[in-house]
Image (cartoon, rainbow over all chains, first blue to last red; front, side, top):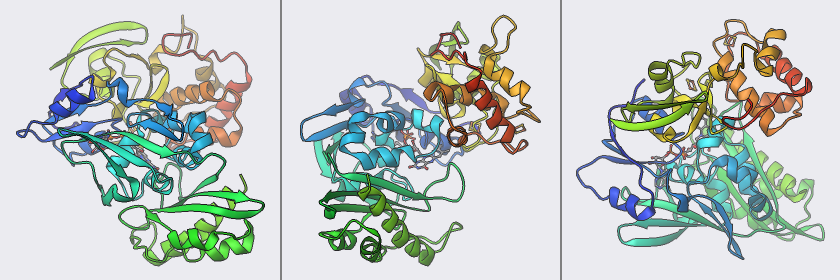
Length: 284
Length: 164
Ligand SMILES: Cc1cc2nc3c(=O)[nH]c(=O)nc-3n(C[C@H](O)[C@H](O)[C@H](O)COP(=O)(O)OP(=O)(O)OC[C@H]3O[C@@H](n4cnc5c(N)ncnc54)[C@H](O)[C@@H]3O)c2cc1C
Ligand code: FES
Ligand code: FES
């Protein structure tokens, strides 16, 4: 289908974009890579009167090394994140999760910022961002503010980014030397996660000295499996001990029931996939 | 209306479009590149795949205004002087199509796949075509064609405007 008619503006700076969002009389949508928004417009599930395209703002693109952290511009594409040597080295679990998103064409257009603000419970990037204790920088009329990932995801499709604001960048503390894995469970190609697990661990002398685990699609927002993280500390990075620690992954979650599986099946998946994700992370 | 200028298959176009115009509709209805087709409403099928500045995109999921100032290559821009592009030739020789509806998108994505990974395994070919659906062939001969094109050496895969 053809979207409803809207006005369009493509500012060249964040300041101009924020002022374009300021108008109260309009139903405004920010357009990033368009890989979620354009399908929504085509199906006429949204009818904005103005699109503010942030794709022509150079300061929103790119990956920079800031010493103890990586900073990724919101408009950096999935393909750029997945291919980046900096991301692979210092935030491996984000690189692996990004490779698992959609298909090559969508990864050429879709952006990290767009995925995080879209906040689909089955989206693959919120969980690694939460696991890596990232910080998100948001620009609005009152200037810039920084929100930790733990406070960013409010509900299904709802984040700390307000209607008149723009997510500008993501700051990720370096996890250099940590093993990483993203275990995504789907039934068919090019599918959203039924359940997925982002795991990154530090192994010293065969035992786990630090572990971060987050779950995709086990509730309205991504969830840290803190019980598992604690149970893994000091344990051998091997089969049975890891599986035992992972068996509490689904505690405190609230997974959906839908045509891909009911809540109890998802709880089972979360435990099994967490074990696999941690073992694979510890092995690389 | 918005004014855009886009290079399509090597030719410059300057046109007025409504901001809501999808790139695929601009290509088909205004430029006349009906070789690029629309197969779905949900961005899943990949039949509309073109190259935007040398990388594959689903042209139903890009607005024409987003492509302003950029360069597009469609299936119609591949053959040179009556000679099929090596990927088209490989599809032809390996019987990689039946109804042919998915073929424009399959060929464009297959070229992108080899640009990214010139010697893929069978598994990597299947994975790289994840965003393109075929209702006829069962994919076997498509995978065969891409592997054959990769082997038959000089698939010259340039970026936009290059020697596609
Ligand atoms: C066929 C298909 C399969 C897919 N499969 C997967 C998958 O398996 N896993 C997965 O995680 N995703 C998947 N996606 C979604 C894809 O990852 C999108 O790229 C992503 O959800 C949105 O990013 P975008 O840049 O395209 O954002 P857009 O579509 O442009 O925007 C999405 C929403 O976020 C808002 N927004 C975007 N950027 C900003 C910003 N910087 N500041 C404020 N608001 C902003 C927009 O207003 C809009 O509401 C799939 C998409 C398609 C079409
Ligand atoms: S028409 Fe189906 S993905 Fe574009
Ligand atoms: S040949 Fe008919 S859809 Fe692929």
